[in-house]
Amino acid sequence: MYEIVFSRKAAKSVGELPRAHREKLITIIADLKSNPFSHPYRKIRGETNLYRIRLGEYRLLYELNEEQKRIVILKLDKRSKVYDR
Image (tube, rainbow, N blue to C red; front, side):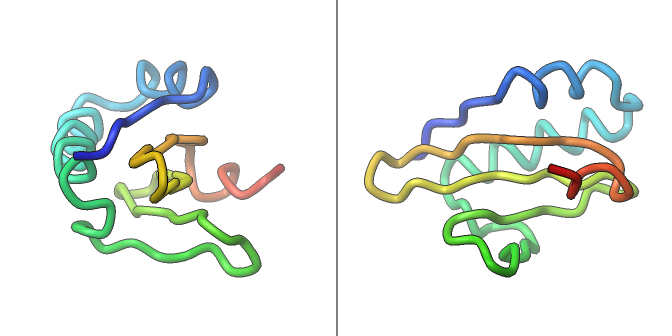
């Protein structure tokens, strides 16, 4: 079982999501806890442990730490904004 941790920015973004997206996010988080690769994901090119999951027009960026069994949700935003550093 993996521990899910939200960054401050990602936690704030959850409240701003439309209701349908929040409900889907709950399902995705539950699935990630048992298997971080259960949903269609993509590895972010050029990064070591950074992945993304598509959530409609939104993207969920997360970092996976296999040793600590921890998933850190870094960002949750619209596609046009989420990849800005």
